[in-house]
View 1 (cartoon, rainbow, N blue to C red):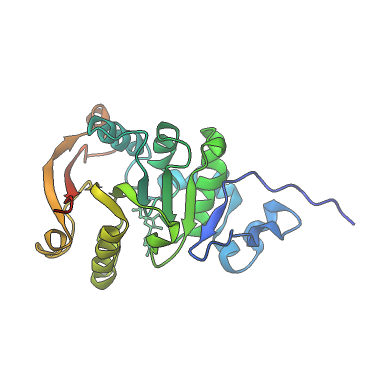
View 2: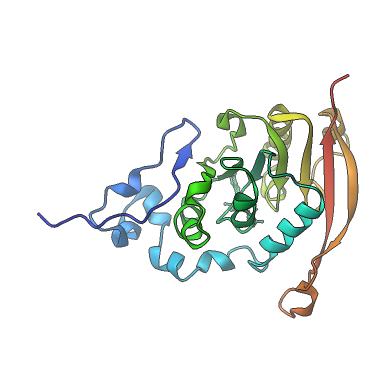
Length: 237
Ligand SMILES: C[S@@+](CC[C@H](N)C(=O)[O-])C[C@H]1O[C@@H](n2cnc3c(N)ncnc32)[C@H](O)[C@@H]1O
């Protein structure tokens, strides 16, 4: 019997039911993963090695570093637990994970190939395995399934792409998994009714243009500025 090629090392990806996504351990050769069905069909190993996931979001991969610098400027603390909604391939996560205390990063996404690029390739590239990031594959953004409360929730280019009913439910769910005083941060205006976030206890504490230093000199990204919105969940009483 032919010897089984070892799988690349990867951070475990969990489902909302707590199971580790393990379908990709079955092929005899990990280079054949893309030929398998179901979740495997979404996975193209060569594309990952070619870093095609760096070109998936329309705007440059380096923007993740710019986002991170801005979050640190906004006093993000290593002790905080951070939920990265629609974390994708870790454009922002690769910077957050080594900054935060071990195990304090939580990323959720519904695209297996993207998440796997994060869990294997990006975590290898950035030496993040020992930092124990928490990654979940889920289409319904069941963020309560992480089983922890968050101090900071990041909605970076995610809720705007959801249908309205799912978007509103997401914000309700966010309120349910936040610590008192937690912050919800996004680099654009939330697309929900003006009253929803205040009704949930989120007060707008900061709205302003953020210019990403250095990016304006690169002609490929005409959007070196975003208008960031930062909300804080009211302390009870
Ligand atoms: C534009 S990308 C942004 C990625 C990342 N937040 C960033 O800014 O670098 C949107 C991400 O949201 C994820 N996404 C979209 N719909 C989702 C859903 N229903 N549940 C979970 N993730 C979703 C996509 O797979 C994708 O990775």
